[in-house]
Length: 189
Image (cartoon, rainbow, N blue to C red; front, top):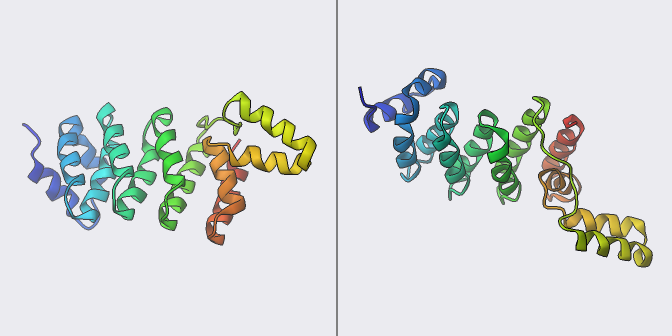
């Protein structure tokens, strides 16, 4: 029997959807979940995002990536939480972009997802400066401004996932985010 949009909506409109059970709808539900992302109901879109992450399908990653670009902070936060259920490689870009989000709650959930992925053994990479030219520039700067200043400039240019977490730990305007980012760094290998 084909999965309908109404079926998906009925499951997600519950106060506490059973995501494990709903995931049994399978990949046929994915187009409906994408449709729900476009609706004005951000709570329903959040639930649709999380459900997509529970379905073993390549299209689930597309739904989560789309949700990460939502205008609604709660949908972006759901995308951050949903990354915990997806293969790590495609979601590192999503996590990286969500670390730059202007909403504190989105950054918080993103950091918690990174921490959970790191604790589960996911390879989140090493924080390295982008490209050799910047690394060389950082070395030249070390002679002029001292090693500490060059190290900070290299870290500022580091757009890796861990580099961004380090930046949040040192520079985020919200002290709670700085604390969570520091905790996240301690939990990562």
